[in-house]
Length: 578
Figure 1 (cartoon, rainbow, N blue to C red):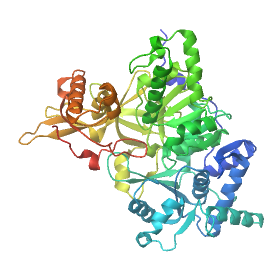
Figure 2: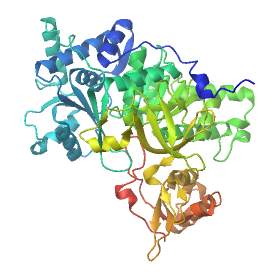
Figure 3: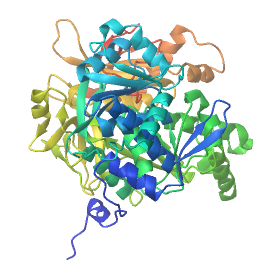
Figure 4: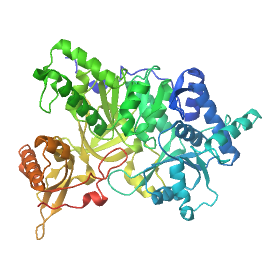
């Protein structure tokens, strides 16, 4: 009898072919030659005109900036990059990671945190936006290295500006300084140092090699074909590995183009200016796009097809569906073919809705420590409610699964980090026999699909040993249109050692107003509606998972840059039930 082959095994026979690269310099020179006259970036000038930067210019700009950095004695030194997504940021990242060790820093961090990361990493040079550099300079007494060089992207009235370094580097290169060309990179040494706050506490320094990231680029290309005609629309912050590896380095390896979003309020405008075909996003952005599509459909369709707060697409006759698909595609720039979703689980119903609109939504799972991708849905196989299958050359398994098959996800592969910066003990606790312990909980089905169920540290354990994953309860709460977002916690009452479920809820005030037919809701009305919503969620859950109390917040939860709610700090303050 013929043995059934799992989908994960079938996938291994379908991978797209890739051409090996081991470091960024090799990738830069390969792409600069192979795609010489193709567009690498689309940028806007000061007047708003869209300009094309070709691969040959990108290669030369990185060489010239790198030559200037070498002239200043920065070979093998730590070089930080901070600022909004821009061509200057990308050139700086590549030059810094080839000359020395690049330290990408979150532009939204408090200045004290930025300076702390500079000090801890022993940064000798910071390239970035004036806004960020000025904040550091206002606190210069806290910077430990008095000789730190500051290189502003958006200023030309200083000899150390980004433009001046490019010009100087070009002059050095043309006079025969080809030291950048001669740099040899050990693909397995530290070249990228990332500080991640995650959602569960203090920042850790993650040490990545160029092999870590290059292997991830090749693995991703093996399951999601990037076309040379593709244009990636870059929205998420580039300091984050998810956007950096998949939204910046992957398209450059593939000969595709990149355009940077000018800000969240400009998304619609930029979509119609750049006409992207690929967008990397987080579930929150996907949900907002979906919400707007449903809202516009219900406003524009004939009355008999409209549905109260529901997607009317399913009930349309086939000829209208075709018109709607084209209309939706045009509102997204006309060329969009795929959303790549990461950082958290996407709503499977939304994924399905986009599929019906001929827009593929591929969600995956990854971590900074894995450069970042571990699993993903692919060109060949997709499952709307799953984080996908193992990417090429990477394996994962579930350690110590419980009766439901849920346990900690552990990962092995060339993408796994070198370790945590200057923290040997933490590294040994996390990487055991080559397996990286993610701290995330999940399960794997018979076909090899991965499902994320929560985080080890956020599991709530009841007195009788029952495990409750807050993310599951939050999913049901957030599925209610009257609730914008929620955070589920385990709390103890006085003189009682039992753990009770408490939900902190930020209502969707706009939806509540609409629900009440346009009248401004009173506090009492909001409490009543949220109480009813909590009661409805409890009916879907077993008794031990029931929400016993809740609090209502008047402002959104604090989030990480990838829009995950932080499970620490002010977010953990319990707002008591009325």
